[in-house]
Length: 155
Image 1: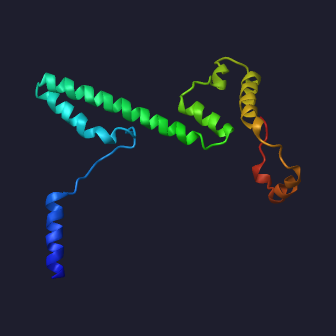
Image 2: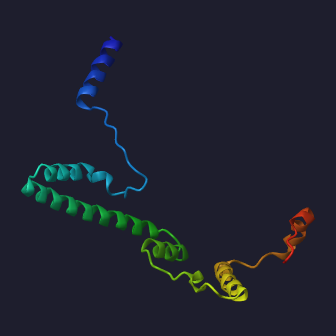
Image 3: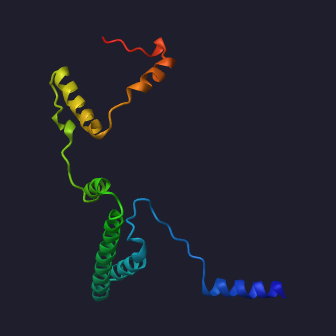
């Protein structure tokens, strides 16, 4: 009886709810998964020459894409509200694709080594500006494993 029950249930599942395989790519935008079917219908209408159906589905696709994009960005912004202000500011800048100028753009061909070194030094000093000062008491612990193999001599 149990075998019969399972065979009936599995046959009904296979007929009514078939297993569908879906392929996604890592580069897919998160809102594209929901409207693949509509995009495929739009493409079929275009390829079959049904211009009025194509325009109708194209408009639906564009509206759906706009709505899904809006919801996606609203969700991203909502997740920023739970962060502290400092983290929120940094994520907001990355999220909005704000173009900060590259500090290493000042490097040009033909500059002296001293100028290049100063630009690179300013870049790394700017990165570490917000870090707390180093605890000098740990330096003695770091020097215990010192080896002459790791000495770098200047030219």
